Image 1 (cartoon, rainbow, N blue to C red):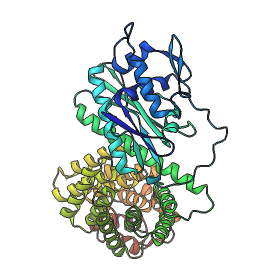
Image 2 (tube, one colour):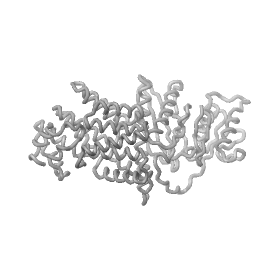
Image 3 (tube, rainbow, N blue to C red):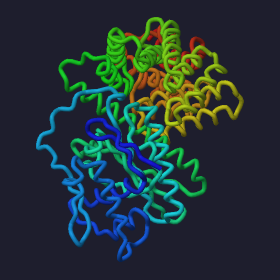
Image 4 (cartoon, rainbow, N blue to C red):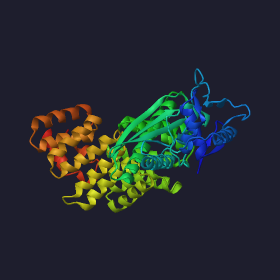
Length: 502
């Protein structure tokens, strides 16, 4: 097996499994001398014999691949009679500002996750996580993913110098530990240029179903890295005075969509995506993101013609799919528009396709659960909605649109008269992001259960924050499920909470 990496000039550097393990073992001890015996143990798990020169031969091959001059090595130096030492390049005292680029313009190095203990079990699990993670990230963040062909499990606490040397902007590494019947996965994302750790997370699970846990870990890390990179890259664009290229415009727009939903954030994101498409109309990611702003406007009631916005969003999502038939995010948006249009079977097919392509797409799991809830009905229907929400929260526990998901489920409970969940879920949603639908749902739920004082308090908050609202225009909204308005329980609850017109 081989591992394709890239040098600073973008040229491919193909390492064997052993060469990569050797490089990682040296980099872990950067600046320190590592004996031949320890290096052989790291590479092959055996001790060196008195005349064993296999490490020397491997070092020579590695030097020819990564050194500018293998006869005068500067990275891997020989310490006579002892072993070898990795000398990390001296960092610049002040790194120049990094230009803002799109996902397709940066590179991530996915290092094989280390297995710490129980080599037989953990090695396969760690190898599976890092290998699948590289494949998934290629689809969800784009860019150049370095390391997707790796099939080895080596220690991963390497310095950012490896990432810089191999031309990567970010380095992803991690390890797997076992304690009894429990597994713990630690993962981190580091800026290779500055050495700063951007994100780190610990994920715990059991040994009962390793395949499911491996899939969950991969999806959770991929989603977290996707959201972190959107924030980091969009912040880099925001530091520039002129954001004029299509790439920069899309990146900046994604930054606004990555924040809790608000009318202002959507307006800014939409303007940026429209500007990007005026410069380059063939960017499926810009088209899909524009569709997201359209459907979000309709679902949150920030559109004067929500039905037209939904139709526009569906057309944009279809166009993005035609340009890239494996674009999971576009399938998710198409499924969402069809669900709102009450074309539930078609929504189910599109959402299922999105999850098949990218299991880490947390919003697709939520919408799939809601769709199955509508299709099944009956007493067990809510199990599908909760299953989708639970899966999405496991994948993305701090997702920027978590408040919207909780609100949607709360609406469904109020509609069938389940007051306890109809109060709890909107309250939790408001704690994350006080959107108008969640506040209105909570006021209605309190009124319908006879808690008049609470209903008036929440209703007063609603009318104070959204002075432009009337009961009529609120009833015209399409949010959570268009069938709830008009003549819905929430509509009746709002009338009980306040005067006939807001």
